[in-house]
Length: 143
Image (cartoon, rainbow, N blue to C red; front, side, top):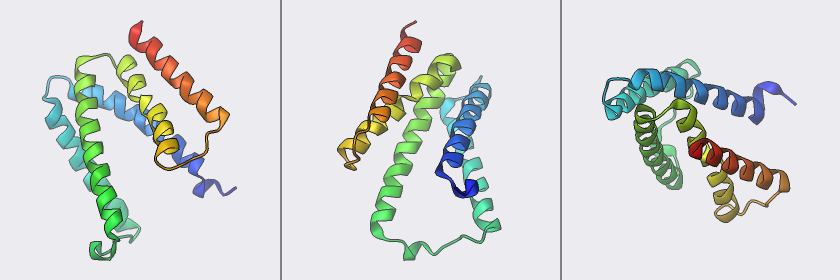
């Protein structure tokens, strides 16, 4: 397996950077409006992504993209924005040790959506793991 092209490497990177996102977000949102914090974060993401596209010469003409890609990317952007607004407000109001794990309930939700919407086949390890995530989130939220 080519590690540089492995989905697992990128998934682990996503988890690591998501952890840093929670930590830095909790520190950064202290004492400021959480919506403003989300806006600042979004500008940084825009600049970093534009830089990566430029360095890798990966810019493409938006008119060449299929309409369904546009539609789903716009919907994804709306969902992301709403998620970030909720997440930063939750970080502002609650402890990071509870907010971040509860946010990870998205893993269990996406498993269900993958089964229902995308027709993915259920596998016992995925179902058990998703159930453990739900159980862990409940323990963290309630105790």
